[in-house]
Image (cartoon, rainbow, N blue to C red; front, top):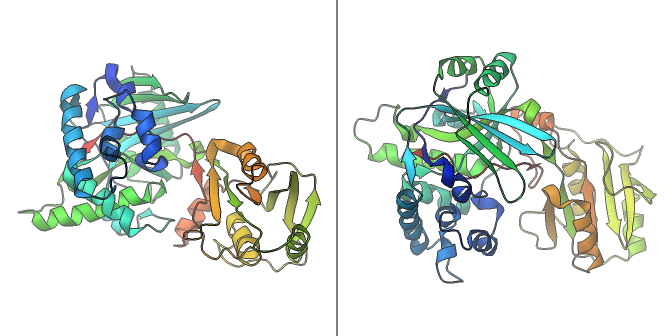
Length: 408
């Protein structure tokens, strides 16, 4: 059973919501965050990436950065201002990007269910990133950005959401990237809470580090608590839950700086040991089991050779795994994409034109365009208890930080 819990959100006034809302902390680097927040003292990036208000070159994990986060958070609470809701609520969060629309439920979910794998994962986390967000949460006594969850959709939940959307929204804003964000407060929460009791499992789509950090923060707070009951706010973490039928995953493509000492002809010959190659292919593969490769101003189509041994295992069947195991590793010598500096990733809306640009400008020797991982593949990997390869999914559109905050 999936537990969702209404919460008292700390939120901006509707008039200031657009200025406060910011991209997630982990999709921009320090320079990009500084540029996005320039001239906007209300941007939540001053809280989620506080190093932008410190001298250039400041260690992002230094004590000064976390102290600045607390200072900026208190300033934002006063100046935006941010206000706490009178009572606990659930919220609906609608994202519209072009023709795509998705609606999720903003709620707090159980850290116990995260720990016991009722909320399933598909990604490994890095200790340094966990350390960072755990300290950020503890210093602010708040979870400032939601974890993106999904579940196999159910008609009764869809119907409850549709009914709640008929009310006036709390926020309705269009961000600078053209994506529309609309949020409704749902004061009558009983039916939605009850409906989720029939949902057997939840799945992390994006935000593994935030979830892991919430679990670690809970452990620290529990240790310091007198008379721990399990009902305290720190036992829950901020989420937005979208039905699987609403999600949109875009391709997460690869570029490699060199051909591992091979000439173009040697490289193509090596590929032919595993793949069938077609010249003049489209930049985007048309279906699962196909890859497009850009090399010296030409697109090539790749498909596993008919006599190739098929991979075994849920993860091994993924297109991203096959490309890694049979080409990037075996031919280009890229054994660990987490640490190898010769590979980079191009996700989301940047598309294949960006791949062409990087190769044409000499910043990469070859680029690979993949068919997007499907939501069902993500769910199957999670159910199998396996781990997706790094950079397997790019979700669009992305949620905004700072609109609904969970205090702990």
